[in-house]
Structures are given as structure tokens and as C-alpha cells.
Length: 105
Image 1 (cartoon, helix red, strand yellow):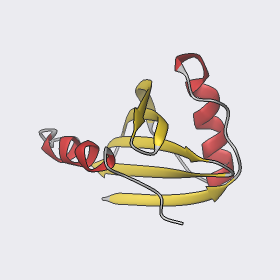
Image 2 (cartoon, one colour):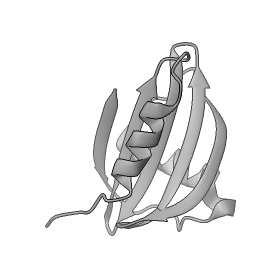
Image 3 (tube, helix red, strand yellow):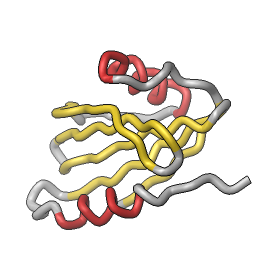
Image 4 (cartoon, helix red, strand yellow):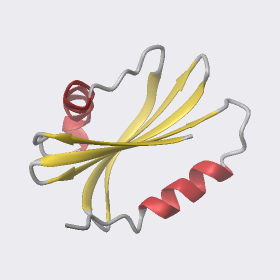
């Protein structure tokens, strides 16, 4: 399923070297629990809203795709959790949808 969290606080600037620090800060500030999930890959990128940090993980209950999206003095964490035996189509649709994510004020 998909989970969307908004949290207050600024995150470190996103670049390839800061991905571990960004994830740790997002976990703390958004009170995320990644129990049992091991990050298998991470990368910096961008979507319509701006820079993002993207993480893929695997755990005993399945896979997770996590996007951390800074938005000034707050940030979003968007997570997709899928079973291990999925073919990746859901992840592709999820990422395609995120490409058009924008904040409304």
C-alpha cells in the first residue's frame, strides 16, 4: 500500500553523498519505522516539486520504495510497500504518478 506522511522540519540538502543523513533525519522527524527493512539502493533525483531522495528496501514482509520530498520548512515521505513476489509494475506506476506531484498551498 501507499503511505504519505508530512512532517515539520528542514532536511539536509539532497545529493548523492547525503542520502544516508537525509534518510536518518526523515525517519526521526517523521517518526518512521523501518524495522527489518534493509536499504538496497538509494539515489538523488528530482520531480516536479524539486529534489528528492529515493530509497529501495527489502524486508521480511516485502519490498519498500520510499521517496523523501523536501518542501521548505516541511517535507513529505511517500512510501510504497509491496509483496516480494510482485513484478514491478506497481512500482513503475507509483513512480510515474510521483513525477507529477505538486504542493498546493
